[in-house]
Image 1: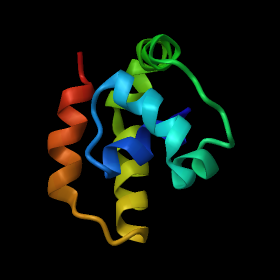
Image 2: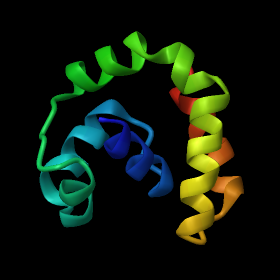
Image 3: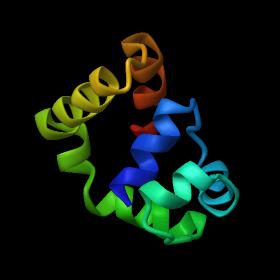
Image 4: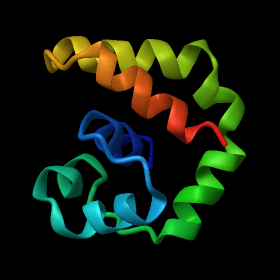
Length: 86
Protein backbone atom coordinates (compact mmCIF):
# COMPACT_ATOMS: atom_id res chain seq x y z
CA UNK A 1 0.00 0.00 0.00
CA UNK A 2 2.90 2.34 0.74
CA UNK A 3 4.15 1.75 -2.80
CA UNK A 4 0.80 2.83 -4.21
CA UNK A 5 0.80 6.01 -2.13
CA UNK A 6 4.39 6.89 -3.03
CA UNK A 7 3.73 6.17 -6.70
CA UNK A 8 0.70 8.45 -6.56
CA UNK A 9 2.64 11.24 -4.86
CA UNK A 10 5.37 11.03 -7.48
CA UNK A 11 2.70 11.38 -10.19
CA UNK A 12 0.91 14.29 -8.51
CA UNK A 13 -2.08 12.23 -7.38
CA UNK A 14 -3.47 13.25 -3.99
CA UNK A 15 -7.10 12.12 -4.08
CA UNK A 16 -7.97 8.73 -2.60
CA UNK A 17 -10.36 8.00 -5.46
CA UNK A 18 -7.69 8.96 -7.97
CA UNK A 19 -5.24 6.58 -6.22
CA UNK A 20 -7.86 3.83 -6.48
CA UNK A 21 -8.26 4.53 -10.20
CA UNK A 22 -4.48 4.67 -10.70
CA UNK A 23 -4.06 1.25 -9.08
CA UNK A 24 -6.54 -0.21 -11.58
CA UNK A 25 -5.34 1.37 -14.84
CA UNK A 26 -1.63 2.21 -14.59
CA UNK A 27 0.74 -0.68 -15.31
CA UNK A 28 3.59 0.89 -13.34
CA UNK A 29 1.33 1.33 -10.35
CA UNK A 30 0.12 -2.26 -10.68
CA UNK A 31 3.71 -3.43 -10.58
CA UNK A 32 4.64 -1.24 -7.59
CA UNK A 33 1.57 -2.27 -5.60
CA UNK A 34 1.96 -5.96 -6.41
CA UNK A 35 -1.32 -6.15 -8.30
CA UNK A 36 -3.41 -5.08 -5.30
CA UNK A 37 -6.46 -2.98 -6.24
CA UNK A 38 -7.65 -1.33 -3.02
CA UNK A 39 -10.67 0.94 -3.04
CA UNK A 40 -10.47 4.50 -1.74
CA UNK A 41 -11.84 3.55 1.69
CA UNK A 42 -9.10 0.97 2.27
CA UNK A 43 -6.43 3.44 1.16
CA UNK A 44 -7.88 6.03 3.56
CA UNK A 45 -7.94 3.54 6.44
CA UNK A 46 -4.33 2.60 5.74
CA UNK A 47 -3.29 6.26 5.81
CA UNK A 48 -5.21 6.84 9.06
CA UNK A 49 -3.80 3.71 10.72
CA UNK A 50 -0.23 4.58 9.77
CA UNK A 51 -0.43 8.37 9.91
CA UNK A 52 2.27 8.65 12.58
CA UNK A 53 4.75 6.73 10.46
CA UNK A 54 3.74 8.52 7.29
CA UNK A 55 4.11 11.99 8.77
CA UNK A 56 7.35 11.25 10.60
CA UNK A 57 10.97 10.94 9.60
CA UNK A 58 10.49 7.44 8.18
CA UNK A 59 8.06 8.57 5.49
CA UNK A 60 10.03 11.66 4.57
CA UNK A 61 13.34 9.76 4.37
CA UNK A 62 11.77 6.97 2.35
CA UNK A 63 10.15 9.42 -0.04
CA UNK A 64 13.39 11.40 -0.47
CA UNK A 65 15.29 8.20 -1.22
CA UNK A 66 12.73 7.16 -3.83
CA UNK A 67 12.70 10.62 -5.40
CA UNK A 68 16.50 10.66 -5.52
CA UNK A 69 16.66 7.23 -7.18
CA UNK A 70 14.04 8.19 -9.75
CA UNK A 71 15.48 11.68 -10.36
CA UNK A 72 12.11 13.23 -9.47
CA UNK A 73 11.70 16.75 -8.14
CA UNK A 74 11.47 17.38 -4.41
CA UNK A 75 9.22 20.42 -4.95
CA UNK A 76 6.40 18.25 -6.33
CA UNK A 77 6.80 15.94 -3.33
CA UNK A 78 6.36 18.79 -0.85
CA UNK A 79 3.10 20.06 -2.30
CA UNK A 80 1.62 16.58 -2.78
CA UNK A 81 2.75 15.34 0.65
CA UNK A 82 0.96 18.19 2.40
CA UNK A 83 -2.36 17.31 0.76
CA UNK A 84 -2.23 13.82 2.34
CA UNK A 85 -2.10 15.30 5.83
CA UNK A 86 -5.73 15.40 6.82
